[in-house]
Amino acid sequence: MNSQVPRDHDGAGDRGLDPPRRSALWQAKLRALVGGRWTISATAEPAGFPGGAALIDQEADRTWVLLADPAGIERRLGGAVAVALRAGTPKLDVLVDGDHGAPVLARRATCFAVPPTIWRVAGAGLEPVDAAPPTAEHAPPAEAELYRPLLLAAGLSPLVEGGVLTGEVLGLETARVVVDPDGGARVEAGVGRFDREAGSMMFAELGETDSLARAVEIVAQHRHPAAPSHPLNRLVPERWLRSVLLARPGLVGAATLEAVGSAVPRRNLLEAGIASAVGRDLQGDALAVTCATGVDLDAVVGAADDRLCHSPGARLVLVMPDADALGIIHDLAAALAAPAEVVTVPADWRELGAVPT
Image: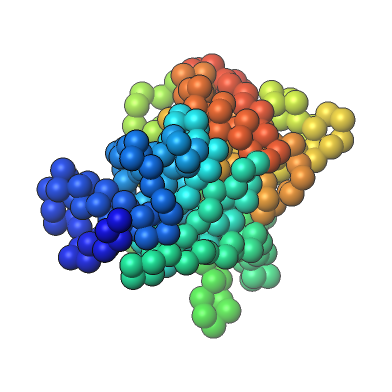
C-alpha cells in the first residue's frame, strides 16, 4: 500500500486552497499516514471532519482523525470522539499535524473510559504524544490581591484565571488587575483589552473607584435579563449561566460553588468556551460543575479536563440549556471514565434570580 505522505501543503499552508481540494488533500494525507502504520481494510470509508479528515474502518473497529488545521487544536477532541461514537468504533487515533496543542489533547484523552491515542505527524510517520500534566491554577501576585476589596466594593465578582485577578458583572469581565514588571499594580476598567485601553483614555480624569463604577454602570445597563439584545449581553453566555449557579447553587444540588479558570482558557471573548466551578454537594462530597451554551462538542471534554485539573475525583455535572443538550452530548458524557451528569436549564435561565454581586 502506498504510504507516501503528500508534502506540498501542511496545516495552515493549505488554507490557500479551495475547500474541496483542501479536504481531498487532507484525506489523502490521512490515508497515507494510516497506511504506513496500520493495515486498512478495503471497506474503510473516508469521512469529512472540520479542519482535517477522518477515516472509518468498521472491520478493524477503528477510526482515525487527522487534525490538519492548527487553529484551536486543543478544543477539537470532542468532535473526533463524536465521530468514533457515531461510527460505533471503540478505537480512536487522533493524528495532530504540528506540535502545538498535542500534549494537552493527550491529557484530555485520558479522561475517557477508552482513551483515544494521540499521535504527532513526524514526516511520513507518527510519534505517540505524552500527556501534558494537569494545569494548576496560579494565585495572582500579592500586589494584585490588594485590589480585591476595590473590585468587591464596585459590585464586581472577583475571579482568578490564569493567575490574573479580574472582576465580572454576571460573568462578563469588566475590570482586570494588571501587575507591571516592576511589581506595581493597577486596575483597568473595560470589557476586553481594547475596551480597557479605550477606558483608560475615557476615564483618565477619574480615579480608580470612579472609573470602575462607571464601567460597571455601563455593563449593568445591558447585562440583565430584560435588556434588549446588545453585544454586552450576548458575550460569554456560559459565564453568565455560571454566575446564576454561583448565586443559586441549589439549582444543581450544590451546597457551595466557587468559580475556577478553565484548563484551556479562551483566546478572546468571541470564542466558544465553558465556565467551571468547584464545590460541595448537599451531602458534602466534592462536586465539579461546568456550564456551556450552544452546541459545543468539546464542552464535555473541557468539563472533564477542568475537573481533572481542579478537583480530581469529583462528581461532574455539565449544565446547559435544554435545546443544546443533544443526544451526542449525553453520549460523550457517558463515555468518560467517570461519566458526567448532564443537567439542563430552561431557555429563560437568565431570569433564575442572578443579580450583579
